[in-house]
Length: 139
Image 1 (tube, one colour):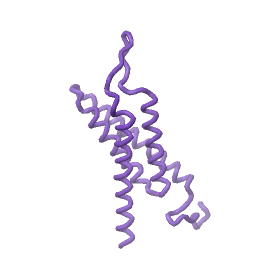
Image 2: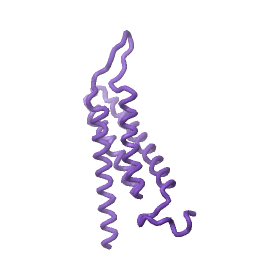
Image 3: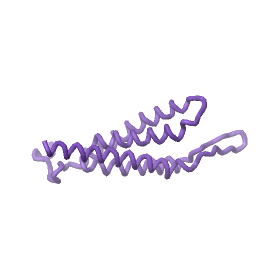
Image 4: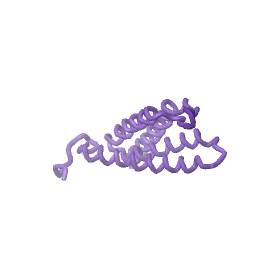
């Protein structure tokens, strides 16, 4: 019973930490740039490709780290919840209501992307929680 409670608390803490990392990454990479750029008749922005790339790489590292210690569900759910909440907060001042489509796309993309990263890290990890190779030789 005590081991189950301890595992649950570690999983919960991992979820909160990954969600916090996702929100923090959003603020650092995308939160400060709110202006659209106009070049002739073209309007771009507010984010540049390098900003989104930095956000993705930062989240990739956070999800991979948490998945490496075999906390797969917190890695996926924490990153998804954190990035979805950050995008909702940042985009909610849109009067058209179309920001909800963007938030939904962020939710789905983050969920699928972080799940793929967790699966790959889990498959490459090959160690159980105690740090020992699996008893059946990894098969």
